[in-house]
Picture 1 (cartoon, rainbow, N blue to C red):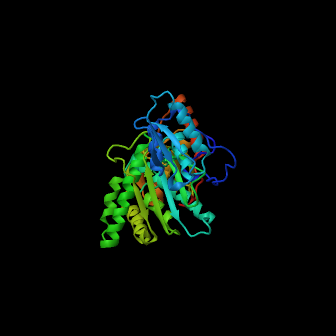
Picture 2 (cartoon, rainbow, N blue to C red; picture 1 turned 180 degrees about the vertical axis):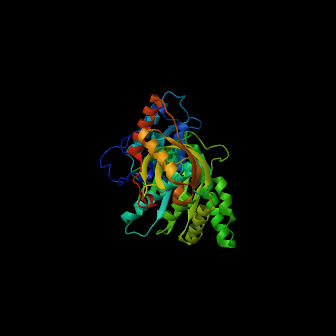
Picture 3 (cartoon, helix red, strand yellow; picture 1 turned 90 degrees about the horizontal axis):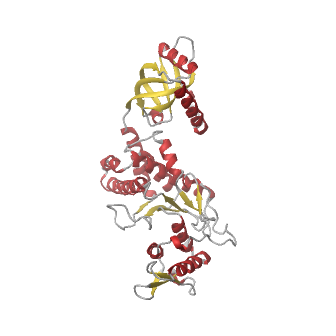
Length: 411
């Protein structure tokens, strides 16, 4: 795949400079696997102009805006002609050698099947260059937006906190980032289609709902539309990602092209979703994020977890334990405050290498990482095979678990 795309956890991979490929030739897709109709769809999508060709047999395409007047592509109408593969090879090689910016994007879309998500962030700069920090903010905001969409594609919540973090991380590991040719303030990512379509479709619905809610709030002062948007995938996390995009910019745009290979999902048609936000939207966005975080209720849970840390100030008093969650809650770890008797049960389970089961209330504060009013703490008996599987799981989890922050270490 050459340097066309970088496989990374979400759009946090460093974007290569558009000249980073030097004299390297752009990677060319296998012509025997390219559908001519997909190629013509991508050419039209990126502004290439059809100049004619034999009706029903071939079409000739020229670059947009009269760029490279000597460049043209002859694309067969289908693969049924004897010279179809040869013509496709010639067209793809021409695209790879072309200096037209959209040529790289077309080849990338052929090499990397998926829905294309584009971020454009307008920031003050000099000669087309932008501050380093603004590009970092763009990637961080895009990563947060994709994570929020992945979570909302799985469940609808006004505020997720740490819930479904692992699901979002697995999704981000399958996102591809186009590196060269995107330009300053621009970012393009491909999300798997059709396998991961719920994330992309949810992102579109949630952003459109957010745009409508902000317009309504600015025009009338009404805020109920933010609450109603939750059922479409709107969340505090998604709003926070938009805030990060907008703050410090002159405006942002998020657009999406459905995969040319797979086609649009049911109910969306061929329209290209485009949503824009401006600095004037920030007060409404920030207030909406706080509103949704406050609105998410605590959750009653019965969870099972391995005791990985214990702490208490004095013997005989209440103590705090950290559990690595095995079942019962969509978070990796929780902190639980226990009375002396239950704390002793947790100590014994930790020494014995067995998990505990308890009832309690998973609280919003701290991102749903704390269980309040814990009760009925009991050890879970394991046979030898289950104990080995638990130890292996804990080792794997420990390798990917984030370091505890200062708040997490405080009673």
